[in-house]
Image (cartoon, rainbow, N blue to C red; front, side):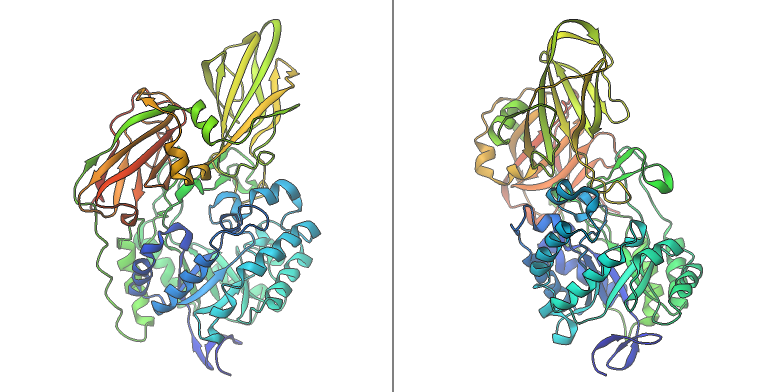
Length: 588
């Protein structure tokens, strides 16, 4: 039989055994101008395949409104041009440390816990989305001359649910839409995950970062026959704001990769190249151990992942060790890595002479003001990424009582009668100083990223409970939202009324930087607290003084010779704010 297929013991291509040496590279985390370079880096490491997720929420911001789904097709074409096969993991849920695990906020806001089940309303949206998405995949399948050799059913479903009716619906839907290449599932090598997430007749694969023989032994207990594959070999890990930077020893990772291959298995490096969570698309996890029900742990902007190809596209020590492990499995000599992409010619200071208070930004770019009995959530206000301004009154006269927020997600900067009164979080939901009535209270609530894994995936953002004064709920609230994508209109942003710089205050700072020798760069904001940066209208992502990330990656394709427009949205106020600057990519 010709073509790619799942055999009794191996993957087969035109009837001959073939081993998949794949690497994860998410097209949505890499500037399109750099896809070719990053794909060439994968080839040089010894890989013959690339894997990507597809984030639903990026491509369908509102029901039935699609946005550049064609990007997936262009990426698959780029993979084909690079001489790589492709594995597509369309979800509908993807995890990926991505906002809401890829599920649209409008979807989880409507269906809640019925997401990722056989529920008819949820499946109706999935059917519509797959009908559009798969139009980019089907004509690019291997049996039609394209690079796509496998497509995943859901994603690590056994870590979440056990609805076999739902999984079977997805299998049938993929086939009905024209997917003819092999399907597969991927789950952790644990019995409950494999029984909950696998589908009879569909290849099951396992995800792990070490102890390959034990992981494959568990998989064999569920699937005695068929090729073995580690669909996610976790060769690094991701970072959370306020935590330590995570690094995996390169030699240890190379030994773990070698063990996978010695088992006769195929592999997908997660991640081969991580990239960047541009535009505030980073997700969040919940702590609390195996239950994933504890404190919020938002992910940083960088998705470097301590991968063999780093965020700047450079080979690391891990790259060279992996190349040594993979080289014996190649058909011939491996290509040399492509030349590095240009770095910024010289350091440059960013001038930010214009400043607009956050209230003016909200007035110009925010949604309409509306009155509610109780505080609406972000979902109620159709805010995916951004912030919401809540305004309410503490009636009086009354004595000072504690003001607190129930169900706060995630962070609120609070003003009482125009004076900053503190910052509230889920863990610290009450102001330190009591509030007397009559008082006017403003709460500027920011989402730090929706949960992307575990039982609290899909939970709402904003004030999901209520505002309490002592034990009394305060009713009657005005609210308006500010979506990050409101900044996609440069003309609208330039029209926000501004004055001279008010150092250290929250708001929108506008200015420019003159570049000589455009290329990859890092943007540094010493002393600034928390917010977002745009260069020439491109959203670099969130910065935050809590670390571990201290600068933002600027793809060279975003910059141009001469003057470049820069906006900084500071959300908390940076009394010690220093000069913002662009610098060349630092040496490894």
